[in-house]
Amino acid sequence: MRTFSIITLGCKVNQYESQQIRELLEDFGLDQVDPTEKTDLVVVNTCCVTHTASARSRQYIRKSKKLSPDAIIVVCGCLTTVQIGELPALTENVHYTQSQKELAAILRRIASGEATTSKWGTRQTCPNNTIRPETNHKIKPKTKVVGKPNASSAPTMCDSSAFCYRRSHEKNEIPGNPPLQDTANDPGSAASPQPSADSMPTEPTFRTLTSFEGHTRAFLKVQDGCDGHCTYCIVPKTRPFVRSKAIGAVISEARALVASGHKEIVVTGVFLGAYGLETVRRRNWDEPQNERLPDLLDQLARIPGLARIRLSSLEPGDVTERLLDTFCEHRNIMPHLHLSLQSGSDAVLRKMCRQYDAEAFRRVVENVKSRLDRPAITTDIIVGFPGETDVDFEDTVQLAREVGFAKMHIFPFSVRRGTAAAKMQSVVDARVIKKRSQIMRDLNTELGSEFREQFIGESAEVLVEGDVWNHFAMVIDAGSGKAMQYLNGEVAGEVDYPGELTEFTFMNIGRQGNESWEGGIDEVALFDNPISQDEILAVMSDGFVTAVSPAGKLTSTWGQIKK
Image (cartoon, rainbow, N blue to C red; front, side, top):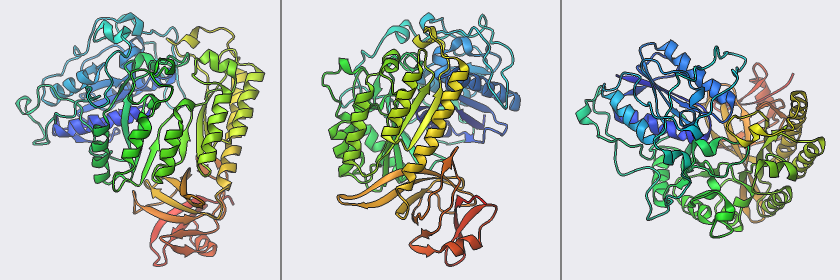
């Protein structure tokens, strides 16, 4: 056992946990290879938020087995914790794991040569967490899911009945309580390519990260679990325990990530607004507002060398005055808030069991805009939820226009078996959902263009992420100081300075559609060295503008010009 690869599907939390898996396996002396290469071990970190995500997870399991027939396949993530009926039957050298503890243990056994059969991971059925599909769900366009999983032969696993029924009665992990992960034990070091069982810890654990390999921005998971039970969401069945990481552990991990070269950290969790609490249900909180997240951000923002902090998704109720005070106090906290709207209709929001109404969302956004200079507000929208009428949809369109979202993620509603919404009546016709989704996508393009046009002629501090994608934060002068806004753009060509900050000046920001620029830039300033439009056009190639330093060295390419 010498090499491994990791395939990750799903959210930022999954991506963080895959980095933990990588570090553990490297500590065991294994070398990571690209998922397209043959390897000795493949870890598939699955997602099951939709049937499509489950189907993609199954595809990767099959593809991994086909690419590396002799490899051991370890399947982890949300699909193995609840969607047991949607997993293919166990075959030789395929292991399903349901918990982090079980995953760490099987990885140790595999790395030491102890585990090679498919018996590992089989558990007694846990009915409330087992959801079996009635139809065969196929995804397009590249790969089709052939055949229906054999439910009778599929593995059934559950650590205990407590995992299925217990809600978040455990103490949370604010100082004095047990941590989310045991960070005291180091699972070992890469002493040899094939470590012996004696050289490994008996009970390895996933430790906090020291680097986020392959990424300029690092994700830092500080919270896990949700017991909110929105009617469309399966997550409370996959991650039912609401837990948080102690502030001290978060700060130590962030310092390590900065020391490894990460200038930006994205603070993430399943329900970030419940950081430090035992439940996400606000009516069960001791106080109407949770100020633990602002306290954490305040300490993170003081870490030397941490240039940027971003937050993953929040609900409107999470945006407190204390949180906005913290944003204003620290200019390295980016004014980009992802507030999940889902619908602008109160009737639909009630059916979804969301914890806010449209007016509350509107008030929060107004307050954010009054405190921060032109913040980027992004969101998620579900189109065609059961019972959504034309009036409900128009309410969503109207609220989106009022807010002026910088970006909207549009999700046509699809039935997720095991959720309350799957049993709802008044299903919206698929043709209507398709039409409404296109309307929202067109609106997203319109609103995104309007948001970006605010910054024409202003300086932009750019954090280069690689040779394909850059994420920009606009730096602008304001009466109270400087603030930063979030934009995305596509770059073409080789970038020699990933992870560095440099300066640009935008004179014309084109429309953005499907994550690509369709306009042009008249002037760019790199490292404070202005480059005129003529100089840029002189090196334009294949419709892409190439920015060149005065010395003639290729430093970046920027913007796609339509001919």
